[in-house]
Amino acid sequence: MKIHIVNGPNLNLVGRREPEIYGNQSLEDYFETLEAHYLEDELHYFQSNHEGALLDYLHEHGFSEGGIILNAGALTHTSLALGDAIKGIEAPVVEVHISNVYEREKIRHHSFLEQGCVHTIVGQGLEGYAQAIEFLRTYQG
Image 1 (cartoon, rainbow, N blue to C red):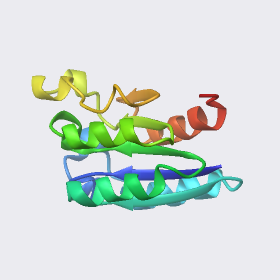
Image 2 (cartoon, rainbow, N blue to C red):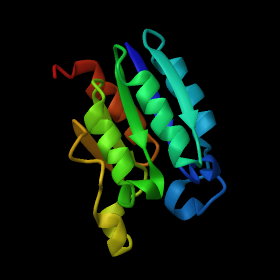
Image 3 (cartoon, rainbow, N blue to C red):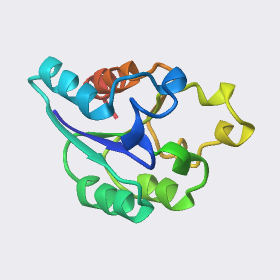
Image 4 (tube, rainbow, N blue to C red):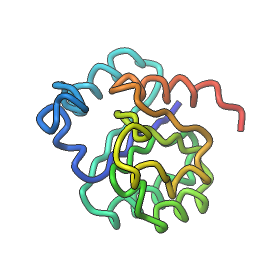
């Protein structure tokens, strides 16, 4: 299965940023772990600190076979545009958050993405990405 893992603003700092929340491993290193474990799947990784680049990526890959795992970072709580993009594409999207957003600041409790997503995984650390892959592999839509 083709799966795109898409990460938003500041997630390039995971492994260095607030390790008590996000841990000490970078997402790039964890992606290599996922690739080694899911050899039968075609995994793609994309990260951008720019909302428009995330939108363009969803538009470009959201009509192909497979699925998308999206951790939009803080844009989850502020971007109507990303929410609309998810509703506008055909590929199933799983929303992932490394931390438990419901135990953090109140502004992080609302997601503009969840309405268009087929599933949400919160607070499972980096393992949430593997859980999202497993979900997409069995998702029947």
